[in-house]
Image (cartoon, rainbow, N blue to C red):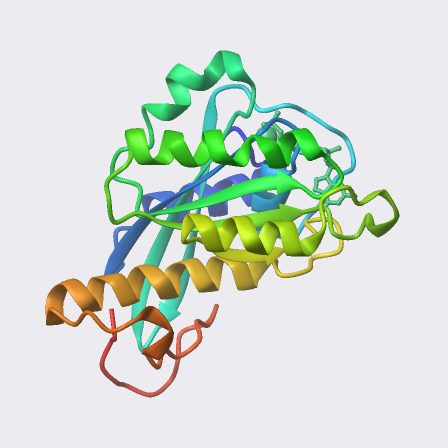
Length: 222
Ligand code: GTP
Ligand code: MG
């Protein structure tokens, strides 16, 4: 994969991507304006690394990470899209089949926040109806430069029916939590479809995800 830097990481990444040993595969997309921190967020989650250099993404790339939920392997195929307008035709082609989106803005950029509505429209236009979305206000370590109040993010997420988190890829704040929540709501949605249960997502008791295989056996709530 083009995103991995060291040969060892590359081998691991290739192994992860090729690994067919999983129970569920969730395709996730990270979208939002250029420079909001999408690539940094994915690197923090998948490799626990961060760099302050800005190398704008060309087109699209992906990383794979496996999480465990009630003894089931859930393979996350996470697509990191370019925020620049000129790649829009390429990136929207990948929306189809995505089960979840991380729609990201930068809390120090009003422009990136104003663009959220447009990104939400893109999701509605190009993805399937049941796709789950988390609105992510990134760079919350830059409190002194904040231009988007937390309440504005919360309100917009509420209006759009999205989950909401403020995060920092730099300081590793809420990064794992965002992915955990997204997987949780996708699993809840799958449960609703299978059981015909229309109860709200918040009422479901969902165990938290783990990065290592659990030892005991049990059923999966997916
Ligand atoms: P495109 O690929 O052009 O769409 O941009 P992107 O959204 O992938 O942005 P990227 O991850 O490349 O980050 C842009 C810049 O913001 C880089 O200089 C990062 O180091 C910086 N950055 C990313 N996340 C954070 C964060 O949480 N805090 C701070 N302070 N800087 C961040
Ligand atoms: Mg990028």
